[in-house]
View 1 (cartoon, helix red, strand yellow):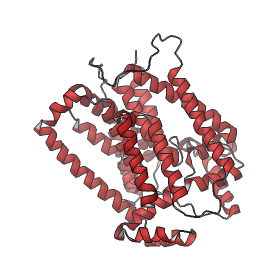
View 2 (cartoon, one colour):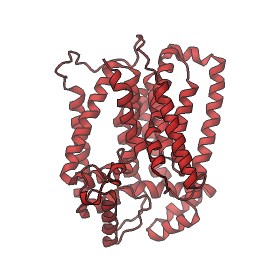
View 3 (cartoon, one colour):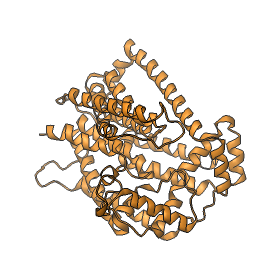
View 4 (cartoon, one colour):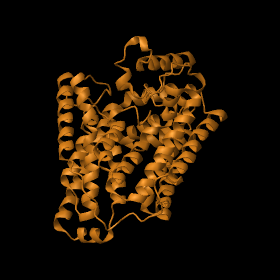
Length: 434
């Protein structure tokens, strides 16, 4: 599979970046297609046999949702606002005019307070670092603290981009804020926030890139020192992620996966050739090849309840009175019962993509309405980013691009650490816009 899929996959990505330029990395469609190509490629090229393979009508449904998003995103990007005389969205990425810098110190402190509340509450109720289980217990204090944690990534990305674009500097404080954003997930042996942060940093760097300032920066001794520190941080982050994966995905999990799935012999041979790192091979294979089979079952068998958005916004639905019938656990139990009836309880990741989440919330028809709305809103953001070229819209673009990863898991609106980014961006920056 390495030669059949991974190598061509990487080559295609490199060629696209080479042909389109680095600016393609600041396009949400690039990341959306990249992640969906990953799970689609693993599904078709892994050779793993599923009891419920993807059917033609399911493929058409998924393509319909995708093109609905594309169409309305294009409409949102190109339809001229009634009170905006500017209509061209073609503009270079950088502008010599320095925009007003928003003071984020107060928001930063709120993020620190939230992280402190969550961390202390987590350590009070759980072990120091929960490498084995992805579930944990927190009280109301920890939940409140978690709400403020996304501020750290929003202000971190903004300050990093602003200093980088207008002064050719790297803000150490911004880097620290971005790193602290991932602490809750690292404590719980997760990795998603780390990847999200990395993508956001890549996007904000591309959008705020200035050749003249960068050339001057490369000759700065302090910058070279920061590069060494960054290299060390990357190595440490890789070690942490590897250890988390290794502790969570042991030989027992590998054996269970091989016993519960029909895996081709060449996959086993290829994995064993990696020696002690075969767990990474199986980890990626298991977590990123099951989404489409899981969605296949959900698409044809889920019959309610439909929670009207509260499955994803479970931070609300978990606390609603029972008589509303909108409790998140009702949908989860329904999905579990559905899997039991069809005899499929082998989806360890439990990821059925954002389209599956929309089905649980809005039904099969409602999916197209929601994707149309989201596509249009994303198109408006894209338009405004290209017109305004401000760091605040570059920050929002970075968050949107990074959140595309969560479309192949459950949903960007399922985790407060992800959708909280959009909420806090609106609170911090929207009120400052003229």
